[in-house]
Amino acid sequence: MSNFTPENADFAERVRSSFESQSIMQLLGARLVGCEPGRCIIELPFNDNLCQQNGFFHAGVTSTIADSAGGYAGFTLMPANADVLTVEFKISLLRPAAGELMIAQGQVIRAGRNLTFTEVTVSVGSHDNMKICASMSQTLACITR
Amino acid sequence: MSNFTPENADFAERVRSSFESQSIMQLLGARLVGCEPGRCIIELPFNDNLCQQNGFFHAGVTSTIADSAGGYAGFTLMPANADVLTVEFKISLLRPAAGELMIAQGQVIRAGRNLTFTEVTVSVGSHDNMKICASMSQTLACITR
Amino acid sequence: MSNFTPENADFAERVRSSFESQSIMQLLGARLVGCEPGRCIIELPFNDNLCQQNGFFHAGVTSTIADSAGGYAGFTLMPANADVLTVEFKISLLRPAAGELMIAQGQVIRAGRNLTFTEVTVSVGSHDNMKICASMSQTLACITR
Amino acid sequence: MSNFTPENADFAERVRSSFESQSIMQLLGARLVGCEPGRCIIELPFNDNLCQQNGFFHAGVTSTIADSAGGYAGFTLMPANADVLTVEFKISLLRPAAGELMIAQGQVIRAGRNLTFTEVTVSVGSHDNMKICASMSQTLACITR
Image (cartoon, rainbow over all chains, first blue to last red; front, top):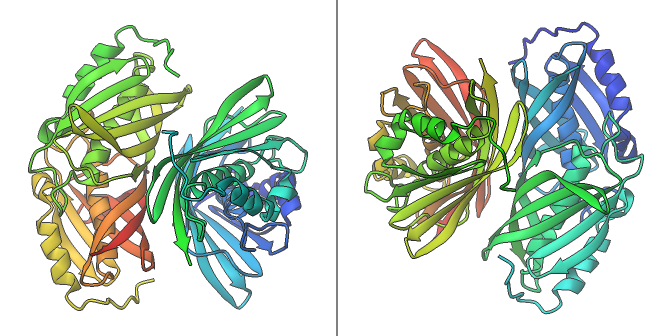
């Protein structure tokens, strides 16, 4: 699944630049930590502003970094004049998202001209003990201008 | 669909108290504006910290208020000793979420002993001109201690 | 949600013709019973060949008529040279699908040039006592040749 | 993900017996071809009664064998007095399902006491050239009597 060839040699620079323009990533404290053709990884350290009622990461926060990880995984394979929009996603919350760090890994499973499908795995825990806590299935649209 | 009888007469107070303990709601600036048996409404005014790369509400932000609106719609019908957790949700992003205000309306469509199903409609725009921008389908678990 | 104007005056004839070419509908015994702009209704009488392990309609059978009801709801609004394909759907199974008749009602909630979103409600029971048993959220692609 | 220990030593026999009681599997012509702890594989040879309007496998047929493959993957890990019901699933249709054979492989990704999450990959083609055509994410309920 990982031998994708990007249409645009500057894909990593374009992902980084777009990520930096997503103001919500700064509000949450999320960091782009990996970007390859068809893949993207985003990390989010825990802080007290990101919680649901039990003090765990809110499912919407999990979804936010997962949506961007999947979206940028898809964006790496899109042409230089394209923008990416999420059409829909589904997320399953396998465990309470309790831990000091959350990592979302997005992976393209099918890249088409107009539509791209990704899967995102989210893990939570501490650096040496991460567990899968959520799984997302996402559809992206490639918008060319 | 809206003639539900809550098991717990204090449902509105419990929803409000739980909402106030969700720190992410304060970080985003979300407000609980409606709560009836089987229904919950959350509003979020636009601000520059909530955006994706085009300056619209990020899909994860939309998902965050929708997840809480659906979750609290379900919570209104749960017994006093219960907590609510999201099992999974799917969200379809019907339009770019561009506007000064976003409103998520959660509605229970089936309340069971262990599992509750909700649907959440999210609108965006200005107070006198709101358009549906997203639709969520959600499964909740009722956790009793 | 129901004041859609079809691009193609022959929409009902095209839906009927396409429905008749779906051989699985005949294998199951499904009937097209309603078709308006943005809406489509499919009925399926119970028979002993459609069951899961408890003798109820199998969730895949429910999904099959729901997928076609949503797909044809979207197809009513597509241009004459278009074909419709399902991109993805999610179905929530609210109750066991036990009864002598199942009815799937598809409704467009957003029709775009390339992508259309629908919701499908499936009811089960007897003619004078139908209950909602499933709810589907679906994305369609409009393929023009 | 595959080192699950079944609670019930007879899991394979129980899966086979339940599969044989699903009459829709016989109507479609589906066969149970693999069953291990946390995994299940179902095959379906093409025939002219399983089609959508272009002569490919109908998405509902794909969903039917995928739903059973995921459901039985989960069932392998449930106690002897339990039954399995599908709560919901989402399926993404990555490619047209054109080919002489379809294979659905279900895999448990998280088994809980009440809820189990699975993922199902569906491939289509000929025996020596299968391609992924669909991906399902599913939630199951374990019902104990």
